Length: 181
Image (cartoon, rainbow, N blue to C red; front, side, top):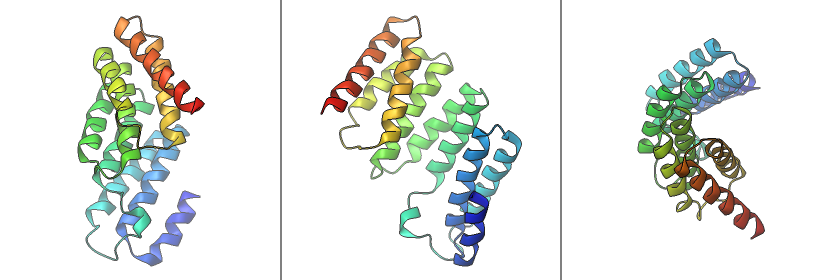
């Protein structure tokens, strides 16, 4: 489907739109464990975004695509292949590059960074970042963010450290209270 979308996007002449589709394809390929092709598609997405100023502008709905999303995708690819330390660097960069007006993305990036930190053995920071993310979730209505929140809570609940268990309890309580609301 991503390749069909790429073909349909070519006549629009927008490198940013083509980059967005390529990064989505890379993430899908990664989930299918085709890491080599996923890396190739991500590299193509990066080349396309560098040409973003040439060609036609991206559609308004693709305006959020840029360096932050590419860093995030690279972090996800590293995480999928078990390279959690490398993932953390890309996820930190994604959060640093993410525009504040995209609250859902910032929340998702924060929680994904928390997951990466916990999986790379930096449990204290991962737990702290996860709890900090709760302060920023009031503005966000996203099933994807809630799923990531539950995932991070699950990961932290398995770690034999007080900070991790406390953070997991707070995240779980947040999900429960928000679900009741």
